[in-house]
Length: 547
Figure 1 (cartoon, helix red, strand yellow):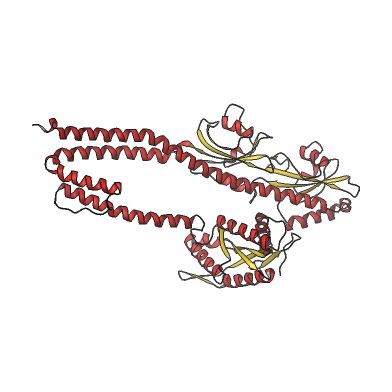
Figure 2 (cartoon, rainbow, N blue to C red):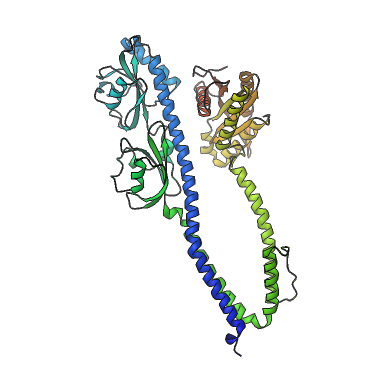
C-alpha cells in the first residue's frame, strides 16, 4: 500500500497540520500580546525617566526660587542709593552661589532701567521693564515669581527670569531683584536638551500656561509654540492636565509612545517620547526570524518523517512517551539511553543535549539574574554603588538619624583635571584610573559606610552612625586626599591626581536628601575655586568654609 494512503501517514499529516495551525494561532495571539508587554515595559521605563527628569528640574527651579527670595530679603535698602556698592554686593552673592549664571539684576521700582547688575551685559541697563510681566507680578507679590521663558532682549539666548520685591522697613517696594538663568545652563535644562531616548526619541519640557516648548532634545523646538488643538490628541490631553502614557500621532505624522510627568513647582510637564516603530522593532525582527525558522523546521520534519517512518515509528513513539512523562513531571528530567545508532538515536542524542543545555541555561539564568540584580544598584565600571543605591542609602540614613537622633556626613568628591587624561591617553587609561580611585575610596571604609559613583569622575561617600560628625568627616576627607594623591601607575605611565571634596553634615533639622547633596556639591566647587586638592565643609549659613 502506498505510504500516503496509510493511517500512519494520515495521522502524521494531521499532526503536521495541527502544528502549522498551532504556530499560526500562536502568532496571531502572541504577537499582539508581546507588543502589549513591550509597550507597557517601555512606557514604564519612559515614565520613570521622565519622573526623574521632572524631579531634577523641579529641584533646580525651587533652589533658584529659594535663592532669589533669600537675596531679596537680605539686600540692605541703603545700598540702593550706592550703585557701585550694590554691584559689589551682587557680585559677592553671585560668586558664592552662582545659580543664576546669566546674572543678578536690581530693577528700579518704576521699571525704568537698572540700579545695578552683575555681570554687566551690554545694553541690559538701558532696557525698560515697567511693562514686562514678571516685573509687574513681582511688584504685587510677597514671594518669588517666575517669568515666561523667552529669549533675552540683550543676549538673545533662551532664558528664564525669577524675581522678588525688595521692601524697606515700611514694607514699601523700593526695587525688584531678578535672577536670569540660561535654559541650557549646566545642571538646569542642559541634560534635557542633550539627551536622546533610544535612537530617535527624546524629551520635551512644555509650559501649558504659555503654550510653549521650554526645552527639547531638538534645539530647534526650544521656545517654539505648541501645536494647535487637534494636531496631536495626546498632547491636547496633556495640556488639559492628563499625566501618564499613551500612543499618539505627532505633528510630523509619526506615531509615538509618550509619557508625561508634571514639574510641580512650575506647572510645566516633561514628555518622554519614542517612535513606536523603534519600540516594536525587536518584535518585528523576531517575527521575521521566527517565521523563516518555522518554515525550515516544518519542512525538515516532513522530510524526515516520510523517509524514516516505517522503521523508526516505534522507537520514536517510545522516546516521545518518555519525553512527555518528563515534561509532565512523572519522570525525572534525564538523558535517555541510546539503543540504536540511527536517526532515532540522533533524536535521542539531541534530546540529551537539550537536557544538558537546559541545565546549563538554568544555571546561566540564575547567574544572569544575580548579575542583573547587582548591575541595577552598582556602577558597571567600578563596582561601586550607583546613584539609585546612593539615594536609597541616603534616605535610610536620614530616616534612621531622624528616628534615633543620630548624625551622618556626605562627602562629594570630584577629581581635579581628569578630563585631559581621557583626551590625551584615551578612555582605557581614564577607566583604569577610575577603578583604582574607587578602590582607594573604599579602602578603610566601614561596612556601614557607602561609596558611590555618580558618573564621570564624581564620587560620593556616605558616613553614617558618627559620634563626632565634623571631625570624623574631616578625618576621612584628609585620608581620601592623601590616598588619591599617591601616583597612579597605568601600564607603566605615572599619573598624579588630586581631588576636591565638599562635605555636608546632617545634624538634624528639616533638610531633604537633595538639599544635602546640593550642599556637598556647592562645598566641592568652593574647594575647586580655592585651588583644588582641598576639602570644604558646608555650614548652616549656606556658605561653605574650609576646616
